[in-house]
Structure formats: C-alpha cells, structure tokens
Figure 1: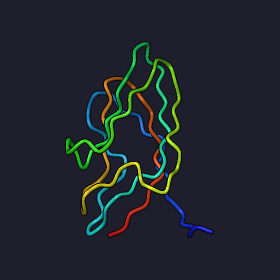
Figure 2: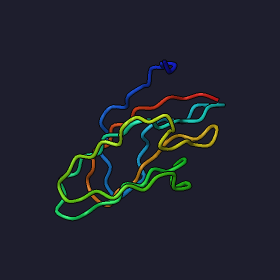
Figure 3: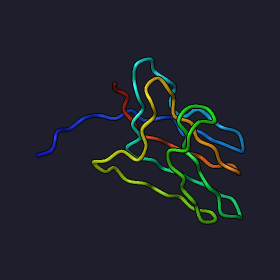
Length: 106
C-alpha cells in the first residue's frame, strides 16, 4: 500500500487577467500541486496558467472549453512544483475559479 499524506486545500480563488496568488510562498519550501478544480462560465475558451511566483515561469498551462468545470485528479507525480521559496500563482484571461490541493516541503 502506498504511503498516505494529507494535502491542504485553498479556498476557491477567482482570477481575472492579473496574476493571482493561490498558495503563499513558504521560506525554504516548494509548493507541490497535486490536484486542481477549475471552473469557468465564460463564452470563450480560456487558458489557466500556473506560475512559479508572481509572473514567473509557467509550470502548467490548462485550456478550458466554454462554460465548464475541469478536475485534474491526484496522481503520484505532482502537476506542478515551484522552486524553493516561491508561491504558486495562476493567471487567466477571464473570470475563472481555481481550487488547489497542495503540499509544501523542502
């Protein structure tokens, strides 16, 4: 049986055009994104870009169809990992709500 660990969950966070903080930076730690729920009600497709720090390197780019909810499920390999000391941010072109399940560790 695989080892178990508990993740933390962010509050649903709305993003719109600007880079938004999803998980705050933690000194000496990286943020590991394990699962994410993304919801959009826009009339056009939208990209959600997960970033290493504010405006930083793109870690994951997810394209959403019109008016949809997408769940990227837990896997043994994290969806994204920030560099040590950086927070996890995301950016979208339209109003999109993101909920992340994550851990932090060195």
